[in-house]
Length: 356
Image 1: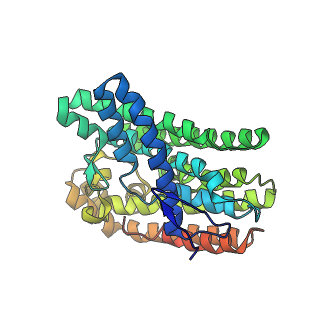
Image 2 (image 1 turned 30 degrees about the vertical axis):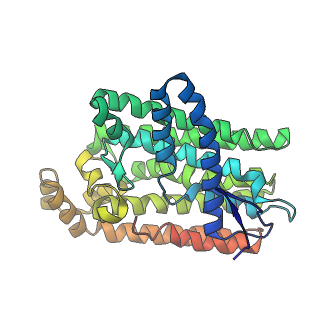
Image 3 (image 1 turned 90 degrees about the vertical axis):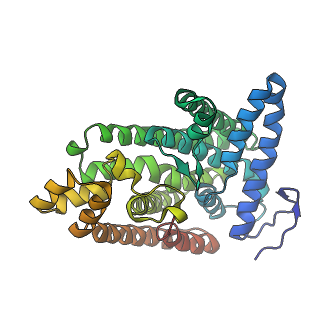
């Protein structure tokens, strides 16, 4: 484990050797805490209600989570970073990804009418408890918007040469566009799930989740290190898409069969909204005529039983394993630092075989 000391929320001295996962998360969260602490007073001076609004946004950002996106960005950067490069120089960029993630979660929860996230009320439910559902929805949208603006502000604090800044920003923008595109397709699928397919569900998984969870954070980290090797770029893209899709397929399974006490989200949320996930599309593809007929009218609990009986969950597990193997192979052959290669191979399994 790398040696480090803490000063407040920040790492006082960040070593040039790779940091432990715990130290990395502490550094990212310290960066976020320091940045957010400077944002709230400015809103407080306008109106006390705005200070409370900003504190709610801060609490959502700091409410925990796996910090997957900054972790992948770090190892994307570390894979090609020079021996003189320090983590401290790129921490604002890593923190910006977590602010963007909060934006996406807040808006996603609102669109899905989710009641809880990480075991706590979602943003729109927090505000609905104050002044009703319409106010809650409006405030939830604004919380997400604020987090996205904060992400831009924090990213702007990274000191990089202009050419590197342009490349970092281009990847960041593409990551945001693909996440929004995937979210639109996700919402569209709920309007006519009968017309959806396994293939289209995988397109949603790739854009809504894989691109901004693994694929582009890795490329973002590569750009931060001014990495230009096309072999590394290709390896990161292959790994990112494969492992990112596997990450979403695991989410599909957890959304139906996960333990709410562990996932922090209600059970069977996807089934209650009729979301055409890859799991549900596979179940329809594999179901007998009798199962298909019952699936259309059954209650949520019975739907979960029918889906299991079709063999769709087992098939999804096979798809997850195949994608993890594809990602591991791509990264094993990549010309990157050994510590990064080892970490990314371990992460491929860690993020796709999880209880929450």
